[in-house]
Length: 296
Ligand SMILES: NC(=O)c1ccc[n+]([C@@H]2O[C@H](COP(=O)([O-])OP(=O)(O)OC[C@H]3O[C@@H](n4cnc5c(N)ncnc54)[C@H](OP(=O)(O)O)[C@@H]3O)[C@@H](O)[C@H]2O)c1
Figure 1: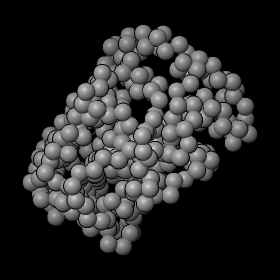
Figure 2: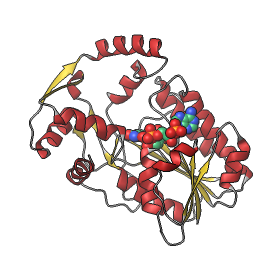
Figure 3: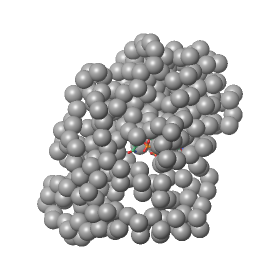
């Protein structure tokens, strides 16, 4: 199978490339936006780094030529002066879908988020919902995987969790009472590898979350305990954080916004976990935390 990956230098992309490196029968095109990003990619004989631009259809067509499937990972939660939801989450997905159509790919795999909906009041969830619609309406077999916070080496979630757990005191939004279902990036990569290596039909949307639901404050305390530490978890009132975020993000042209705060503090709840449907045995939360501690 020839698999094209977009956003291959993302934390998920790097983990996925490690799963696909030297895998028998897998030929991988690792798409990134700059040559500089090549240095971040795991190297293997079956992985070919390639520069792509989402504004240049030819570059996407070339990257996807002869591929069976594309795994579209590029996307953002935090907007910046150079990257916003419309460009990074919606327009980039439309460009990838157009190239997949032009190159007659047989399968599009898209990473979305738990809570995605084109009708959401939240701009991030809305942009991921709009991207899902573009993928689902492509006329190509599609698998959409909605994920919660991802924990693995290099993920933003792992960095913030470890930073909070390493100090004797930390302050988190609203005291961290929101519930999370952290998913191990290794488990996501296993699912993506199986999906990418096998034929698909129709359009399916899966919600894939970790095995345990836990309030964020308890996740911090659990991580601290595993580090041999104790942490006192305090609270930053959400309304105050939103006022501060609104001001600084307007001045800076990006960063943490009230939209991001709403995403972070929303409970990650799913009706049916897709682990069984995807043939996955999920890592325990303890194993995932051990892995991110070891990698830090
Ligand atoms: N991390 C999580 O907890 C989490 C949770 C739910 C869903 N997801 C989704 O999973 C995917 C991978 O997440 P991640 O955390 O691994 O990503 P990441 O490490 O933050 O990397 C983001 C990727 O998106 C690319 N990108 C940024 N702006 C772009 C733009 N305007 N156009 C095209 N590409 C752009 C980046 O390329 P450059 O390096 O060139 O900027 C990079 O490859 C994303 O779609 C994300 O929304 C992640």
